[in-house]
Amino acid sequence: MNPGKARATSNSSMLLDIESLTKIFNLRQGLATTQLIAVDQANFSLKSDQPEIFALAGESGSGKTTVARMILGLTEPTSGRLRYRGKDITQLSRREKKSWYFREVQPIFQNPFATFSPLKRIETYLFETAVNYQIVDKCQLQPYVDQVLSSVGLSLAEISGRYPNELSGGQAQRVSVARALITNPTLLIADEPVSMVDASLRMSIVNLFRELRDQKGVSVLYITHDLATAYYAADRIAVMLRGWIIESGPVEKVLGNPLHPYTQDLKKSIPTPNPDKKWGDLISLEGFDSEALTNVGCKYASRCAEATDMCRQQTPESVEKDGRQVKCFLYEAT
Image (cartoon, rainbow, N blue to C red; front, side):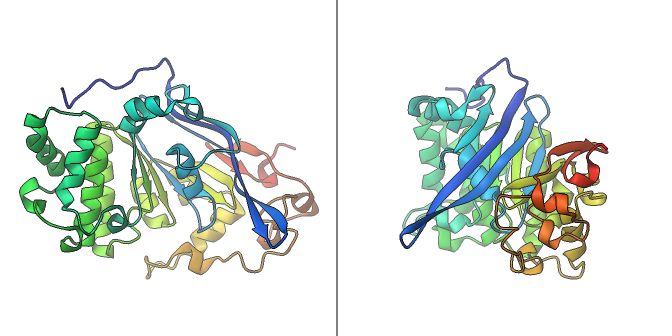
């Protein structure tokens, strides 16, 4: 079997195409049931012929991880369309997902140690992934795994015989990336991949994603609360607020000159001397009034200095302005 296998083909020009994606959770509170709209009509896409790093950014609870879980098939969408290479992911059979989709779309999670059993040698995971997906013949197994490890700055000799607790955080996350690369994927879903890594190692992981994009043609959906690494790593970004994508476009425009009042406030709230400060520590949902927690009007109206009665009573549409999409009445045509 050839490790550089041919990838699935499609007539679609889009690698990933998300349209009006919505996820509603029903929450039981005593005898009552309330609805939480975790993702609300999300739209974005990645082109198949332009490998890129697309950042999905927002505070805790903004819905970004729920989007990732839907793409990975771990959570079923309530409505909307989720296509990969033109195929509706939700309609794929279990066999199709394993034989094709899960080869091409691989996850990298926040905590690398949570994905490995402390009782299992680390190289076992890499070998099992290659065998389960029938990537290479057994005689090629060790050389192939060593080759993949070298692409993330490690070697099989370096990790062989070691258990997860014997690795540093940076090494464990690099092994997680290597495990994802075993299947020769086209898209990595990286959910907060540097949040549990020491600050000194974060840029090495981010630089690794850039190398994978440039050298292997791998696209990365980079989910983060960290504006600094998003600005450094991403080509494009979508900023989420309570399920909405409120501004999206080239990262230089969205973070360099934000248009939406929420994005502007996020940028202002990041203290330059302390890059480890999380968004959730800076802008809290505490203080949102009851009106803001309903589905009426703009979800940032109660905190926005520019809000009008229209903002509190009507839902804004996403409009194109200065090369990006922004969900705000300030930019609607008059």
